[in-house]
Length: 133
Image (cartoon, rainbow, N blue to C red):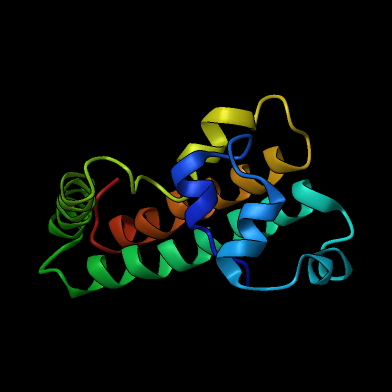
């Protein structure tokens, strides 16, 4: 899977295909056979892949906490710590792209929406199991 860092740090429009290939240390010609839809397809895959990995992290943090509320607090505290440690350059893996282009780029809008829906559903399930409406 392509690395998500260029999109997270520079956004969708600020990330070029050559940057992605260079950071992956791959030949440029190797990209298009895997992503014939170009940058939009690559961006959508990065959003879905990153969203799934971030959900795994959030779910693990919530499940390790003493209760669902503490788990959410731990998630936000961890995210704030990462932002501070990276001088606000390592933000939400989906938020950067979603805020930038999801309203104007149809291939990316459903990808970001799907990720956010799964991010809402997972904590909601844990809240419901804990009796929190």
